[in-house]
Figure 1 (spheres, one colour):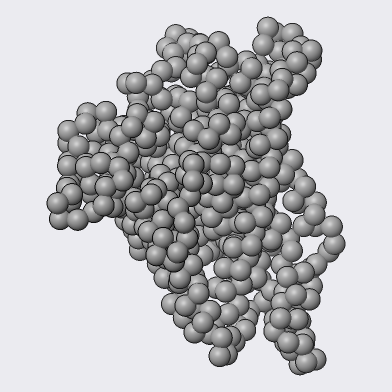
Figure 2 (cartoon, helix red, strand yellow):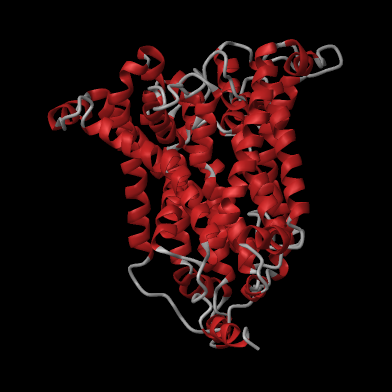
Length: 578
């Protein structure tokens, strides 16, 4: 009977339970790790930008920011990000309406195909489209069959418009995910009332649905803007040959030509890039929340019948998917199966030598693959463990310290990867105190950057898993005398394991192919898989780069299917789930 008063207090005040020491020291361990991996490097980046000699120097900042190359790169970055966001908004919003509100069939397969380009590394996307639009590519052959004359001069993708187009296509799934989530929460009462009043489906869309979904649309626009401004793969593979400088390519080229001596100036450009992305997110948030669109009503699934337009709309949707996805990937596969770039694929030119070289005969590619494999495996394991405890604290113990740690992890993920890379270089350039060991030039600095950049990625699905767990189970075990680690192992971990594993696969999927973070951290002896595509293409090995790209896509699809299987009973955990 002595435990009944305590049980009644916990039922009335679920947050009144005093957490013993084990929770506190685990929380402080998380705080130390996030502080050293995220907060301290970003603070070092800020200080190096404003005071490289230890004293703030505003004249140097203004002189650097007013140079013609920086002004041109800043203008190009803004123009490209805005143009790509406009394309992403159009495609992503249409796709979200089609999936969330219409009665199209096979929507799960279509969503999987629509999300797939977002999972494919951007450098592979750029390589695939370049090869699709080469003189012997399938797109040029299709246009020639329609009577369109061949393009004169350099390939059309090597231009600012080409960069905008590919970034818009690549980031459209980000808008789709945000807008679909908003559309799924629409109150059906208002829509039904508009229909009863005689409004046509188009009028309902324009006057009811889109105004209510405006916050979600602007949230998707912010995601697309940030992703476009910080996308290194497409900007580098198309912009550097076309001589279209952006902030991210300027940082890359300057560090390659000058070395660590350029880090203070590159810290300034990194902060400028971070300021642009954060300003874009802030403006989008302000525009999306200018008017209160909260309404009361029932938020259940809405379906607008397409009627006689159903079959044409489905055909158009799948045709667009074939154009966006299958056309460039078929060109990439064709190139990987030939001995020379531009060769037509037939029985005389068909060869698997590029795949043999990628898997067995080129030590640099093989070394990059295994380095990426074990680095991402370690990062996924550590981040999943951190996310389990962070999600528990965020769900049931939202103290001020926990909120600060959560905000720090979200900020590190929202900033462009090159900012994380520069911050890691500055923070780990000197030997670590006490142990006198330097991480600069080793794979461990890449691991540290991964741990800083991708914590939020695994934390989100893990939080979704904890949201489905009844806290009374944990409280009952606590009253029975189980310690925190015992409760986590025996009760909480089995319940949230599918969501946590899905998050770990997302981290593995992203880190295995990423390029934004590691492009500034890799060396000749610490290559990873993402930058290898760029280096192979720059070195003239386009067919080998295509083979590596096809293998990366195969891994991506396999991991997406594995994540879907792990989260099959937890709908909504993965972005491509319907």
